[in-house]
Image (cartoon, rainbow, N blue to C red):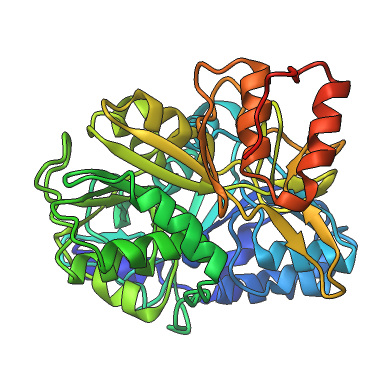
Length: 448
């Protein structure tokens, strides 16, 4: 049977495809902008027929019909490898979102060896190429592992998905697919570049000052990460590399400014390596069929043993709060879940492991409410119930708009002094009192 004959034999409607799903099944919904759309609607229409269908998601970017029609989670249970803004809206409406704590580089192995068997895999893909492959688009992550583990594989074709060249494990062959559904060719979710504040710019300038020619850059999401990229684009730096978990618009600006050549990378020279991308159409157009970009599974991009083979790896990630011992919380506010560990811990480890590398955890010194109330983000202890994303033994540079402090090798009293020095001036006296009460303050400590 030829490829087109096989394609036609597996082509079905979304309603027909989701008939394979039974009560109690585990169903993977795809990741990032590869999450299914028409299949989601078709499955939601079966709400009254099904109970306790367990759905896996990862950074859900879209409104989801299964959650809209089932606000109590009786028919469809929403499980996430990393909670998104859309997921937080689901949680706010009262439906649980069950997070799976992960070290992101390990997720493909979790899928292959540890989680309950996946009964049905559903994900958006690019149109089939002449060799019979459906490219996953700009969300490689753990998709191939899901396809290998699933009993039934359904692909939802979207002509708007950019074809993301590998790397490896960036596609699934038609011979591995059970059903093909042609989707609505909806544009991918766009994440506009957030505006850069004065604080973002101050923090970013402190980081960029520590970046030299030939460094390899990993930056995360948010206005502060965007600020780092835009300052690099306007700098005199040259021959930078890209080895990152997430590709964002800022990398396009750095590349177009001639800053990212990748010529000095230890591995994948010349390539912009990533496992998923989220940004605007500009980013997706840049990725499409671009041999400069290489999409790898997350057990390659995020494994510290691999990423740290790039010398002078600079990793930049964000935190919600840091305590005066150096513990970093980046995923919850007390017990209120916000996001997830993601790849932060992976790249904090990699930054230290890389020869000449550095890892930076960044945050504004404080939040200031509309009424002028100031809440410090350098705190005596992590808010009770808060999740420690980076242990104090692992985190290194902490950066606020008041400075940066390297914690590796420092005693608890040195850490308290260094971190209080970069806290907001209005809270430093209170932090000193807390440090004294916790017996990690010496009379010889100095405050700027």
